[in-house]
Image (cartoon, rainbow, N blue to C red; front, side, top):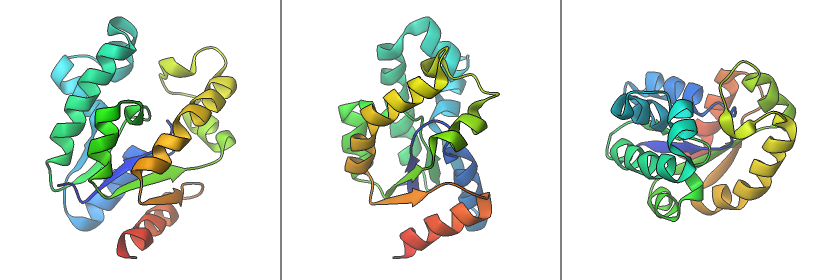
Length: 163
């Protein structure tokens, strides 16, 4: 069982926060997109574009299953919660929802490869937020404000883990 699993929209800092927590705890940081990429031989965005979202979600679920079997901190892809089996699995873990303002997310994602954000990232992000927020709420034990500096966000996560 993972020490904790981080969920949230793209750009909320899941991977970065997972690495910071793992460093503090002296354990592994696992990222489901990285696990998927390693097993499929291409990046997660490329796999999504070439294989489609249904196939991507199936592979993502397998990556999540492998990750939560570790004694580490798991960062998930933002859409993992759209799969019912993933939500069931996340509900058994100490899952934390990282959330921040759309303007912050858009600033963080300005250089990234995010196929689901398309040509109009602000509108797409708002659509993703509407579609996924209920799922994040369903699977998470806590919602953490991910605006601000990394050390501050890590401290916020540690506070909810210790509560």
